[in-house]
Length: 242
Image 1 (cartoon, rainbow, N blue to C red):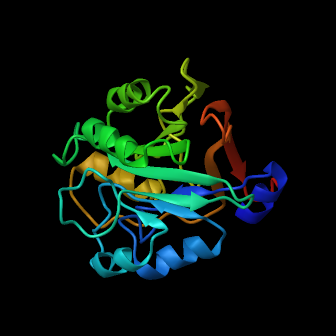
Image 2: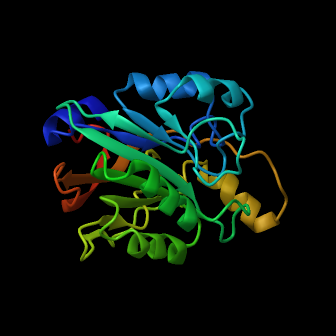
């Protein structure tokens, strides 16, 4: 599906948040390799970056995987990197995690400032994955980086929002890019198991849903010279629709 969509839309760099691909919680080396093998260029993570312990070592050796830059100093991996598109343009990608209703990491806003200082305008294009629970925190990050980042894309809540826009300073923004997974589910989990848990308030093991999948995300057109976004468009494609 990704290959056909990439070809149809002329996409030159694919970024995917992969923090829940290992059975719905975290990411492992095999699942990371599987994502990269589909044609994804960069994997960003989030608050479950290290839920699977094999990532502690693997993330050090795979520069295409990013974890939130506002993890405390000394945590394995990297929070941002510079990647080359299929047309040879250089794009900086950064991963940040929110703190509202989530783990008390370092300040993502100050981390963003530090990343911009390190990049120093080379390259001009910076795409930020803001992985956060609170919509207010993601919206605030969009405005904080307007005119300084090319795009701020929210992830974590797995429900695609309809507030995509290019902010006045030229930064593409959306509160949540959505989810790639089984369409008839509760955030990728078996809906009946989740309903039962809400009804009984008894914890139990979640089960992954089965059935036709939907691929969701956004396509952003960026100017590599100015770093400004020209457009942002939501994508939601079901199996067999390409």
